[in-house]
Each structure stands twice: as structure tokens, then as C-alpha cells.
Image (cartoon, rainbow, N blue to C red):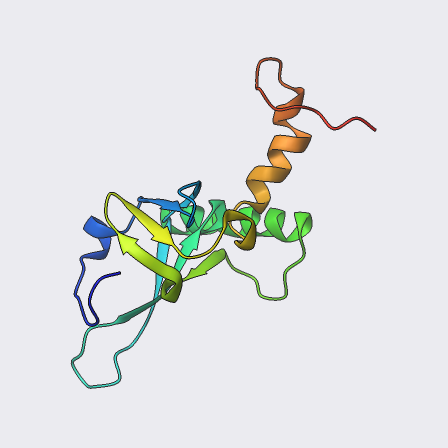
Length: 135
């Protein structure tokens, strides 16, 4: 990863970048970011989490609709904390044309809605390439 204390422009270096896991498998997009205030007065904010998924993107684009998207995610898989899926910035190992994290895709809670929509909606669309689960 970058050297400690490296300053980045969030909109230029992070937002809308592809997130890939440690095996190079695409996991999500960086849809929004979560910061905390600097400890020293006048300091720059510190990035703590990457926010991913429809709830994060909807919040960035249209705050009223983001609540509905988040409720859908919570119906599909109940989570104790409301809000978009998070990836700790501490797991980031490299920032380049994409953002690489040290975890596997299966260890991340970033694609819950996408997987559900794929299984229950898109698998019924001919030519989608998604196999339907037989009951």
C-alpha cells in the first residue's frame, strides 16, 4: 500500500474505482467513502471505510431513494447496523487503476443485493448466463 500519511484526492484516486480481492477477482466499486475528523485541529480527514453497493451509490446520487435500497439489502440479509456495505480501508494493499484489498471476495459483504437479484430475478431472463436454482 501507499506509505503512511500519503495524501490522496478521493474523487480522483478512489471514487468509482474497481475493488479487487487478493486473487484479482473484481468485488465491487468504490461508491462512497467514510471519513473521521483529524485528531489535530486543522488536520485533514482520515479515511476509515470504503462504502460499496447500491445503498452507497444511491446515497451519493439521491439520498431519498437510498433508504429504499438499504431496506432491500436488509430484507435480503438482516444486518445489525443499517447502512451500505463497508470495506475497512485498513485492508487496502494497493491503489492503482483499481483498489486491491487483502481479503477474498467471499469474506466481503459487498455483493448481497447483486447475488440475490442474480439468483431470483436475472436467472429468469433468457440469455442472462445465470443458472437458475432448481427446487
